[in-house]
Image (cartoon, rainbow, N blue to C red; front, side, top):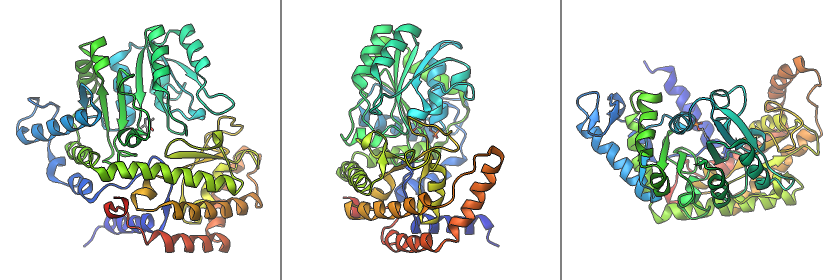
Length: 442
Ligand SMILES: *Cc1c(COP(=O)(O)O)cnc(C)c1O
């Protein structure tokens, strides 16, 4: 008998194939990465590091992990790499655990302005609870306000400054972050989870000359398995030669047990793929597609936070139509065959659950081989869905009615013929592009 899980996986594959995925943190891995992920490597326990494990039988795992570490180090040109973090969030916590004592101050970008929860978001997160959190934001042009970063740094003397983003569409100026960190004697941690691929492909400035420690997830633009890596730069090692050991011990015994060896091997595969000329070409096309998509959306009258993008992502701002409209638009887009995520905008009057924006990006559609022609098409579909939502029913004021409204709205959008017509068009285009395609990209 076949387990129901397998038919659900088939359904998910069909969903991914027939829809257009615009969530900027998602990507499709190569068949080789997928194959390694489902290998026998996940059967093995390997607590510790190559040559010093707590379990027997790790001769081959040692070789695999060493290969992954060497490839990542040479890809970025850094002194040290740890590829064991289970994902980006524990990786950041490990870095803080290595660099700070409880109660020390962390300075990071506000969530609503494009930062990540793990950058010290107050109250509800570990980084905002165990450490004293201070948060900087963006200015009226939606660019990082370095005057604010500098004055907060001088005032609060943070131990760690985080330069990183999840919904900030502009390039990060690592050099200026470095100058501020030096002025107040802080560690500079660059969290490049979103833009790693662009950094490797030369499409975004590199934090390597400026940061002490770099964290990246491996499943976003990097296009590897779900996981993360922590790098220490030459500069970081010069500042503290014990930094690599501190990171190693923060991962295990600090935070984690056994590494996910199949993931480690898949990171090695993805790191090798990232050295290919086709990968560089891929990252160029991510940018070209993002620029084309942004231009088409702007000419369709849709507002973008900061007026555009310098990366792979952009945030659509619907606050001038109605605050909190983002939650409805994300649902309607999904019914129309396009999946994205609702997102706060810097001037947010709503909340993270009822925000005014939608975040989109091009890494996944570019992996499938879509180009500028498809970006114009996607912008047109989005504009039609926005028009449909903007002229329709409104989220109720009353808090208790809101959750049921969004559920009803989901059913309402799924049954609507206008959205179904868009969905059909999306499906016709999407199915022409396989989930992963070196040929199309190269
Ligand atoms: C995605 C992301 C993380 C967290 O990664 P998870 O794998 O989801 O835990 C951390 N920081 C940034 C900047 C991210 O984009």
